[in-house]
Image 1 (cartoon, rainbow, N blue to C red):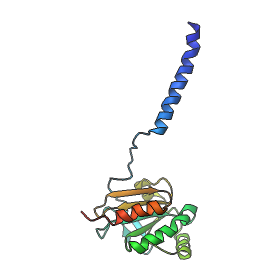
Image 2: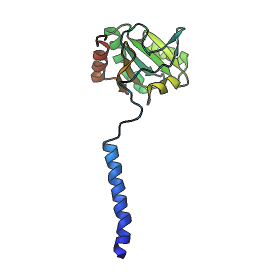
Image 3: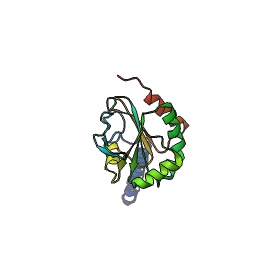
Amino acid sequence: MSRWIFALPVAALILFGLLGAWRMLYPAKGEFERVSRAAPEFVFELREGGEISFAPPADGQPVAVNLFASWCAPCEAEHKYLMQLSQTHPEQLTGILYKDKPENGDAFLNRLGNPFTQVALDPDGKGGLDFGLTGVPETFVISGEGEILLHIAGPLDETSLQKVSEALGAPRS
């Protein structure tokens, strides 16, 4: 009987370890979905003056929204893909300068080129939180009706650029 007293805690530890491994391999669907939901109703101030909201986009066509910052090395690495995207989908790419000073964002875009039709400001990060941002850079494609169609976490690459381009070319419903 005394052997079982020592074996019980070990068995419980093994069981909890297996349960933890299972949850890491097969996580439950999060409460905060980043796609197939309405774009946030947050109203951003535009760098050029005025305001913008993506629920739905103003002109009724799909738009890619890229959250970036001048202090973000992966943002610099993905920038060439944003420049390509702006060539194939002019007027459909908006940048949101996340937790950064406007003058730093201006210097970043002056140095690398500005692929964005508009640049919105999110100095305190509240708009990024409404999107469900986990860290810059992230890109969201929003339908003309204001639904998030695609979410790319991290910097764009050839594969994700193709996905964004396809989503932007999706016909209006």
